[in-house]
Length: 209
Length: 96
View 1 (tube, one colour):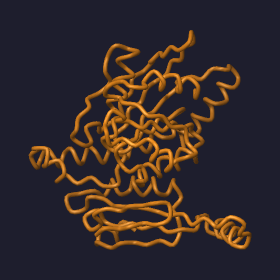
View 2: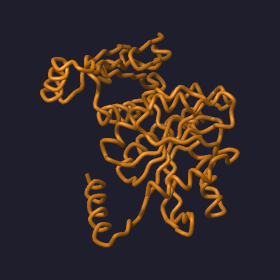
View 3: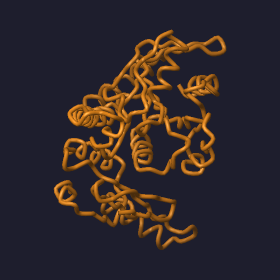
View 4: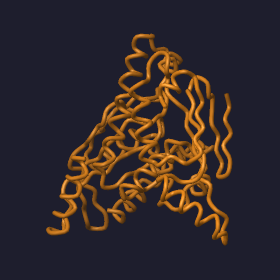
């Protein structure tokens, strides 16, 4: 409720002064889609430093991580925003999955506990966002409930969405599958790992803000 | 609902859950995750009336107005029982 009131007041202020205060761009999506890898690439490109740790082990990001005052420039214009990297949204977290990565039982249970709190926080922070990039793994089936629930919630809150199909460097990547699944959304394919189409992503963010 | 899910029950709802309710369900599920309960698998399908089918369009509208829900189906089950849910636009396949 407090976030909704604050967002409403922010929109009134921006209408009066013609300027968005405290712009927040959020990276959301399922686990291991490459959100933190993308956040790190954006921060390296514009700030010269990374935001967080990326890993193949699920739920590496277990807390909201924010980098303030990221200034992006394009065609002589600039925008400044806070970049928010969120924990991967999941409907299930089984500590036994972490054991496969060589983790001990106690560490795996702790990670699972932290991951559940991270998912809850990520959902709560949806209300704070001005633009959301939903990062999807382009090698996976996009029609999963996490993607559908995220898109539905962003539509309900009237928050602009850009679907970012990541891992386009991999042979199994299939952009058209995502386009067919979500034809009514802005979509683009990138590789956060090798940087392909990242400049196009920045140009698209400019258009959408 | 979570009490039943924690008792290894699969729940079938004859409506599509509102996205905000889905998000709330995910939050509540995360609060209940433990060594014995890993969470849920969930999938929903919205039944859209055929084009040029005014009868079903009106019926669906009345259903939505009276219940706040959309016609369709939602299946929710414990992750330990449901191995995978696959979905294409018109059907859901549940693997247990």
